[in-house]
Amino acid sequence: MDLMLALGSRLGLIVQLTKENSLWTTFLAVTVLVLGKCLMDAFQRKRLPPGPRAWPIFGNMFNLGPLPWSYTFLRELARKHGGLMYLRMGSIPCIVISSSSMAKEVVINHDQQFAFRPVRLFSNTLCKCKDITTSYGPNWRHLRLICTSQFFTKKRISMYEAGRTEEVHTLIKQILRKSGSREDSVVDLPFQLKYTTTNIISRMVFNKRLFVEGDECNLQEAKRYQEVISLHFRTYAVFVISDYFPSLSFITDAQGMKEKMQKVVEQIYKALDEIIDFEEHHRRRMDHANDPEADRDQDFVDLLLATPSHDGVGTLDHETIRGIVMNMLIAGTETQASTLEWAMAYLLQHPDVMKQAQAELDNVVGTQRIVQESDLEHLPYLGAVIKEVSRMQPGAPMSIYHESREKSRMAGYDLPARTRLIFNIHAINRDPCVYDRPDKFDPSRFLRPQGSSHDSFQFMTYGAGRRICPGMPLATLNMAHILAHMLHSFDWKLPGDQDPQDLDMTAKFDGLTAPKKYPLLIIPQPRLPAFLY
Ligand code: HEM
Image (cartoon, rainbow, N blue to C red):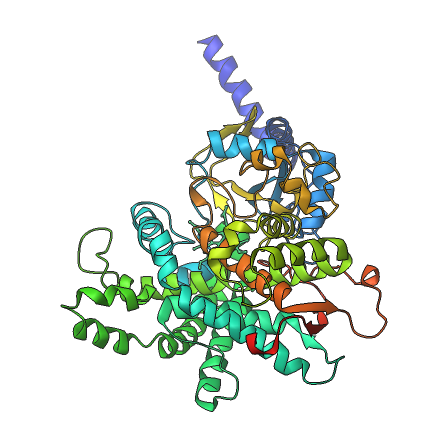
């Protein structure tokens, strides 16, 4: 009993003391909690991959210069922190892969884990992540199968050869026309290349040429297309707080972001539907229902309208088809145009390489006919030039974000669930452990015996693993064809007395592609007989 009383009075005293010192107690508790959290963070940090110091709350968002993923700056950071580097973007954990050996580790051991894509507000609003680029799971597998078994097969690619040849020929004629009769007329090369690569893709995807000079009716369509692309890029770049701090999605809601995005997406759809013309496609489908020859004329939209959905209920809906069309237009046009612009810039700076490529063309094709796609397999030097340009200036210097859904362990480090992964393709392609003098333009490195042994982890221009670019076979063929034609048809020089070595080789990264910051203005001089133009 005495003991109980004594305990009771002690407890009473403690309660009283606590009441009196409640401020102190609260302070103590908060300090313990903060210290505990710091210790836990420090402990966890030890098990995370190395990376630059992060700011509280914002993480590394401010470290990364004007564009969040400036690839050259990240390459510099990776020199210090290594091929597997950890960054935090707001509350989102991210890893950047910058070396060939880490790319191999990721693709061989973590490909499936990191095959997801993060769900951003824009991609979710655009097509509810039902397209190829943003989905993962049964729908994505189904769409990838369509890519590999229908769109980008050798047979299908060769079905569209006539259209591609026509476009390349038009490019050459346009260049000749723009250069005019004067010997020193300058051509805006990236502008012309963009038209050509876009027409080639749009003909395959929905059987239309989007850019036809001098055609008023087509001008409207071209404008609509440009509206679609610029709305897409502008909205894609909008900073949405919940994309970086998912727990703050209530702010995104309060800002009315979803409704604003929805409005833009409706604008994109309206313009896109006019370009695609679903009605015309449905009509054609009915007309050719029993025609076995009709397959020859089918574009991607025709094929997609006849494709069952992944769950076997009906065919693919318009939302999915719009998403896939956008994927092809966004991923397949500027990537090729910027690579080709860089190719001409490098060739101007390396006249010996330009001469050797032209000599090969003259040898294989001669000067009494124009190049055909079937010539390309006999032009190894030209192939090496395209590969070297694609290594040094990849059409997309950073991959698209990958994401894991579960916690994972990579190279001895622990990664939280929903870590985002991005390949710094620019850095991997210039890995000094793989390439001798990696910043030097040297196509012959792909001709030497070891050149053929460069695997996809050393040449990451198209990504690797299950998310590898499905358009690669088309892009490599197409770019080689266009470059071959340009080199065969013209000699090239810079305007005035400009020394090619003074050419500004700065790139301008727009988040996807990185063309030359200053468009390449260039003078063509015909080198084939007039009847071939
Ligand atoms: C020079 C030309 C091209 C380059 C450098 C390029 C590069 C890439 C890269 C780096 C990726 C991302 C890989 C990853 O996430 O890890 C990608 C994905 C993709 N590319 Fe390409 N690409 C080119 C041309 C094309 C073309 C011509 C098309 C189609 C017409 C295309 C369609 C796609 C699609 C649909 C994806 C998403 C694949 C997926 O998420 O499963 N690309 N490309």
